[in-house]
Amino acid sequence: MAWVNPRYRELTGREPPSAAIPTTDDRVAPEDRGVRLATLDRSGREGPETELRVSLSEYQSHKFLSLRVWIKNAQTGHFYPDPKRGISVRLREAEAVADAIREGLRLADDQGEAAPSKGGGPARRELPGQRRLPEVAAGGERFTEF
Image 1 (cartoon, rainbow, N blue to C red):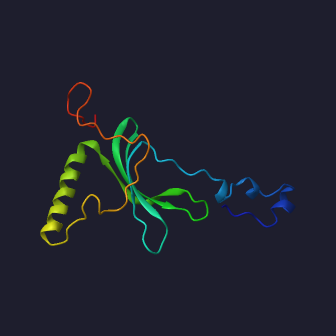
Image 2: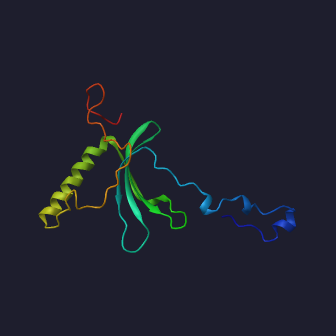
Image 3: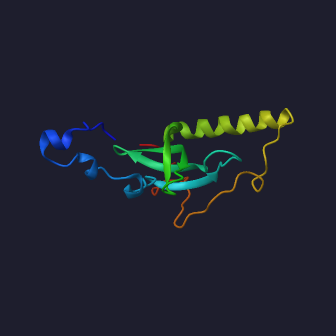
């Protein structure tokens, strides 16, 4: 909220503009752009409810994978993206990133820090209309970023 001179009404003869600024409760929660592929609960014992969202998004006709932490606002009950915790992965980079994640999991397993099985990880929320990324494009070609 912007600072308003305490003498605003006296100086201008009008009501202060703060009446036009929406309160937190009036704001509309932002929508996750793109096709959400997964939602993983990351809430801890203390602190706000958080979730990791993985989405196939688009910016200026370029598709990318978005991995972003969303935090629940206690006042509104809506989730908002955390501007400091997220990453965008170009589709042409996605396979290499997936290989690196698999390698990291293998190394952790070799060191006795096994990753939880598919059923033992954080809760995954299935969404209506959720789709998988295509492996092959409509013409039979391998799906690429461009």
